[in-house]
Length: 126
Image (cartoon, rainbow, N blue to C red; front, side, top):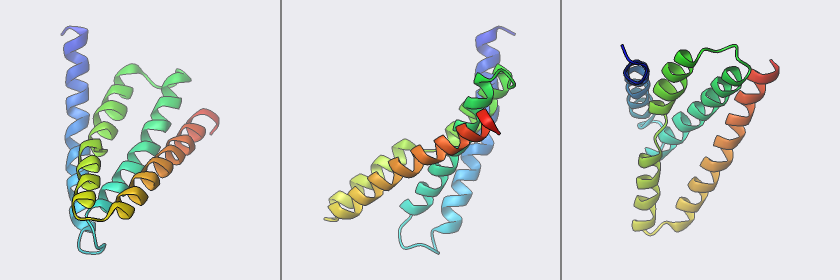
């Protein structure tokens, strides 16, 4: 199998459980929190942590490229969802809640960056 086909297969195999877990997590927490976007927030932050960890392990050469594609790009890439995040921000703006949209945007960026940094730190120095 050609390298690019194998890479695509690894990403696809990793994406299936990541997307399924995102669906289950967001739907599970929806009744517990007033807005669905907080479930999206949570899975995005978790994915940032995981991707930071995978990146650090990959850069330290202790992780193979195939595993990085399977877990990093496939699983954590499909667990997170930028498009849903953007639409949820838009929905808050359209509903006349710009402050909620701003808080969600800033909190998502800050928490995602912190989570990625912690994941990277654990992978690089842990």
